[in-house]
Length: 305
Length: 171
Image (cartoon, rainbow over all chains, first blue to last red; front, top):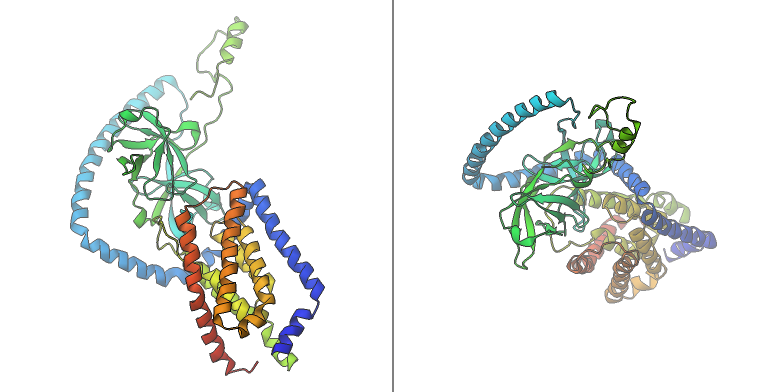
């Protein structure tokens, strides 16, 4: 046995060493390529995940079933408290629904008056959680909807209640969601009663940080945090959570989304805001009699939405 | 005797690939989405090290490279870096596999621990040089400690697996 292992090594020795060196260089080259031009390599990663993971979901089924049974058992214990909590929330939701209906009617009347085109109402598509990120250093999950269902990079993802994360990496049949608790997640937010803008920064804990707050004294624990829609990243006014103060006197957000029970997620379809290049008939100008006025009107900056 | 052993031995690396695939899929199960402040052991790394010392001819370096690259892509690590470091460490151990096997478990554990430490240190160093965001120190250190502790368990299970199989076909 010793002889055969030696002969294995010495057979084609220099060729093996060359091939080994090339393999190591190829791997390091892939790392450099990722560092320099990350979208291409991330697309490769999304394609590989797309090819590998869905084929093996049937293997995960028995383990998934067992973990579901365990978590269901835990939830039976808390059933009564959950019932009370849900009743209370239902009351609040009913009140909100009335207000929303009234606003919608008023909005329709105003739209009719101006004939202005707004963004289409936000629709969503539903995806099922296939897998998590696989390592404790990254917080992300894999959904079973992908490019063939019309999912685009950068769309927001919610569970029934609050924002869960952001789509980053879309394959043909799967897509990856970077959760708000991941260290690289940055979302612009508004803190509701005071209207302060801030940045929700994930730091690998279940309560992400609130940073870059304009005036800290106006923010109290319990204030509601929603997306601000700054930079047309996310649609505005998506519910995220509540402000909480942590022991080290920094402000964190208690997420409303239930991260322990992520099963079905909604991917919010949002169109990127089209840049405004002309007046679009918004204001009617007397044609051809004042070309100077039309020229000065066109110099209005389009991007201050 | 060489040609009798070489035909089935050609595909022995499939065992490693199958075990690695199982470990990867187990890691991807959506069992725990909440972020933790400790990390579990990297069983794939410990298993690769133990296997390379025990049976280096069953683990051609292309197979190690392919499995580790797949793990990098699926587990959201920067692709290629961890794979290159693991490959270098495996080659170091492969050259010393014979004397390490004969020298007793303590020396083998020491060398394997040094290569595992080298992989973690190299990874941290190069990601710091490339200005990538670093994970919290507690995560990396607990992963390192867990992997080192998992190494004897992997070595023992490999010894058990190979001893039962060697009764069936003599190598």
